[in-house]
Image (cartoon, rainbow, N blue to C red; front, side, top):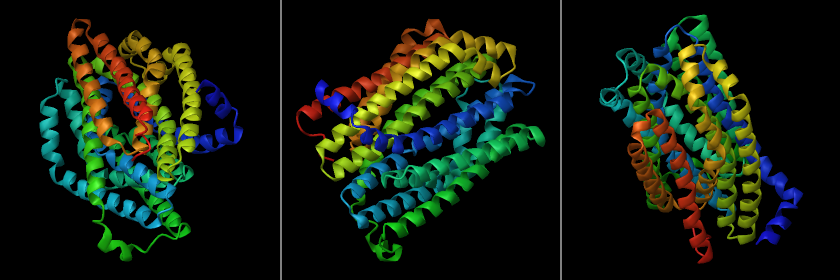
Length: 448
């Protein structure tokens, strides 16, 4: 196996194919946490820590709500990539239509209940009244981006599934450039503070959706996919598999968001400075997540295509080269956080107390890239293989470990939170690795 890996790594055209898929996604994904850093920097330089804490709390709640529906992207990527690998244009078109209808249906439901949902969510927060006030303000405005945000999941997944990484890259970059520009205009220029940051995000989501729809229409024509009206009566075809896959990934996402939400809410219980410091460090974690997700997305597309084509050699090639480049990226991120972490914190917030707290807990982030690398890559493998049940089960086990470790070490305060998070990321990767090795040895993994 080692000799085979060396042979694969010496194949320069293969590296090029992998990087052509991965690099656009890495670049586009990195703009997402950079946007979070800009949000934090713009709000973090206002006069009180509760503005930053409020944005952290409100944006976490929006992220929880939308990311719980992130299965729309993952399931669409896997199914579209398999249809693409099998050269099934009709099924490729149906995957897009099914995903779009599901996204718009969930958006309509969310808009109907978002006010009541906010009341329930914020009633559980231990944050100060000021932080909760601005968090609620942010949530109420951002909710109206739901139709665009959920359609963006489907568009990103479908375009990536067709092995097109450039269109999703520009879609994400345009969304975030609009958001950054409007952040500066609304918050600093017009003084709209938290409301301005939320409104900027809403407008940006619709801008990205418009561009994504244009890209999808262009791909539809290029691939000569069937007319939408011709497929209208067939949208329910094989919908059971789509719904089942989405159900499993939804439950996985529910566990994931439970841990991230707990980080914010429990941090808020430790005080305004701690929740603000954690918001800064979570921006770093998002930088790791979105950077690594670029390679995970590439893995999804390549694994799905290989399974659709029923090609074991394509699958092995994708795994070896993607693991290699992911390790390179993670080492670089570790060196950046170790050498420049304090400087990055100072760039984000000028509040001395928040800087001090963030620097105190920074070592946890230095260790994070190499520990978390495995969970991102195995997520990509299992999404491409559309093995939602395995993802659900391994995530449930890791989440249980997260809470058990936190409460066991709770006397350590905020250190316990970061210890539990680092362990959670490692256990996620370990669990999926065990399942993958078991299925691979039994010859089951190519069976989607």
